[in-house]
Length: 117
Image 1 (cartoon, helix red, strand yellow):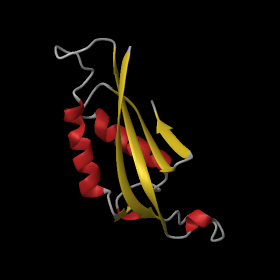
Image 2 (cartoon, one colour):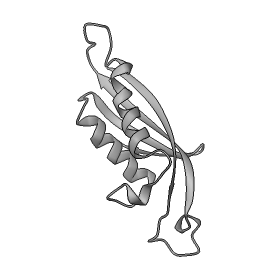
Image 3 (cartoon, one colour):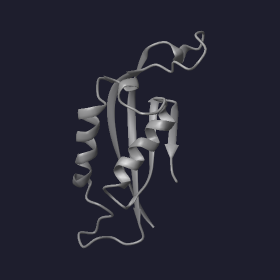
Image 4 (cartoon, helix red, strand yellow):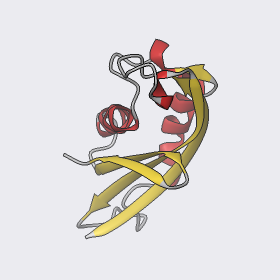
């Protein structure tokens, strides 16, 4: 199995309003997010790729246009946790590229959430 990944970054704010007021994530705050999309295939295409990295520019454009420097509570239809964002980006990417196998989202250098069906 061949696996490739590509990383994207954006900054945004969110607030987990359902948490108790004393929880730090209940307050309005922001993160420098990292999104990693993983693609896999047992075979390579005629160019020797799982998928040309250039094809993934559409995900960068989507992130830049809809998520970068935005308030995520206004964007997502779910609670804007890293877990829900990983699933959102997975579903968006998988609808375009069948080789997508997982998406990871980081809010801080030490935390990651992954969606892999």
